[in-house]
Image (cartoon, rainbow, N blue to C red; front, side, top):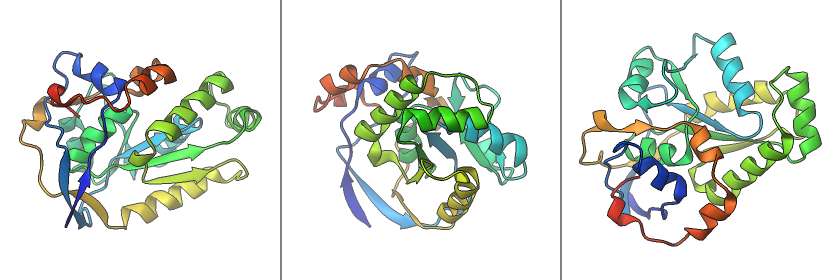
Length: 226
């Protein structure tokens, strides 16, 4: 058992708070954590320029192990519970602030960043996968933002820059991480978890890097929200 200091809240978290009381979870200055082996299939969150491709493949080709939620615009913890009850990983496309809520609520999400260093390599891999055309510059900037501001949320990073078999490596990594013990909050937050919602990644994607940087170090404890 140990204590760890929680991170300062950033703009995506504030945006979450303003969304119809989306969150009512206390954000402690310190939290007591304990090393556990979760007895359930942990939710899966993917970040990076290939995340959408990976999610689609997992859900389409490995439905025995992975499932999504019906409504991705607002995800409630009850929807995640329903997937976990089927003994599957719940695949989520949510903001970093929502990942923090999952962690505090003892869901121990597996959070993997699929890294691709160059924009040309991003274009190459997405073209090979037949993925929708999205600006490689935009994808690269979003990836940089995650690495710069939210690396503390990541369970692991998978480098796909020189790895054509990155998806197979991802499957192996998920299995490996599922079998490992993980630091989890000792207690669940003193709040009604049925009222907690998680917001999609596009809320985060609309923010500029300067927005996040300008809010670093600011104490948002008054919002009492993850």
